[in-house]
Image: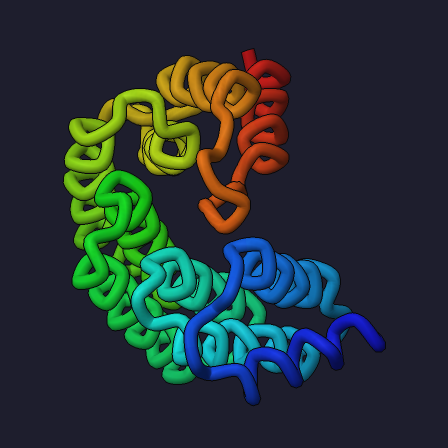
Length: 214
């Protein structure tokens, strides 16, 4: 808790320029750790608020907007009210737009946009056809930018896995995408400590699930 308190103080009161990427990484990592280990909804909300403060303190870094967007997406899965879920996803899309304006990694930001579309389906299953198509198209653009992006490969596998077999989906069709995702997670190396790094464990889980269904 003491470390997190230090991070919060740093984020709020050191608005000038971040002296080192290491300091920015520590703030982001602390916030993401709080988000991923939050036992209550309030704790998760606090973590996302921390990510918002970081994005405001370092607006020229596309990664800060990226992680704030990611935080809102993850928080949407924990909220119960559908209107609140959609509002969080609206906030995530706005943050992704700021990341694009900051000339961030287009493949990563497009992948996160596809994640927003998939999250929209979790709010209301009747949206599946609309947003599954949007996610598929957006992931296609992301993979055109970077064919080895493990998060894009993972989310594409998710899209296929949850598509009925009659429409070209299912576990058998999704399996190669999860295999590629896990492969590239193992071989990829971040160029910066503040770059996106989520998804590997989920990709491994889905890979095993598909293998169990063979």
